[in-house]
Length: 160
Ligand code: 4NP
Image (cartoon, rainbow, N blue to C red; front, side, top):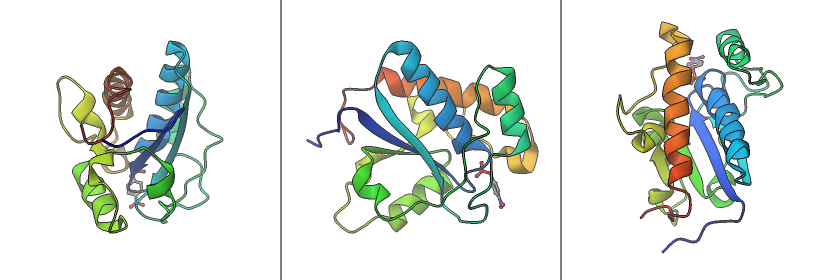
């Protein structure tokens, strides 16, 4: 069985770390705080296309509408040390998940990479990328459902 850190450490991952995973970081932090669960939450991108950039305007605006401030976040790529540091690496879509598994060191337990929406009870498995299609409100709702399910599963070790 894999042991997890206390507090649990979660890295939210999408392609650019400007649209979906910054929302996931902000939403999970807020939901964990509301439940009184101490957690370390960060986000990163598979790519470094937007390294140093703030979140997309659409993500900042929908977050603000829903009462969250995410504008101080800055995009960064996934780093090798993330696979050691974080208990869970949570991918926004299947392509991100496959990329994480591909990037992981050889001794890494791939059971620690999950799709966010595997924790949601219904709906799609992938969070659609609003960078291409818009729809930030729907994306916010999907990510919220995934984060709530993720928090419900805390205490279950990755891979179980
Ligand atoms: P994200 O969206 O992965 O949700 O941050 C994207 C942002 C930027 C790009 C692709 C997806 N891009 O190709 O620059």
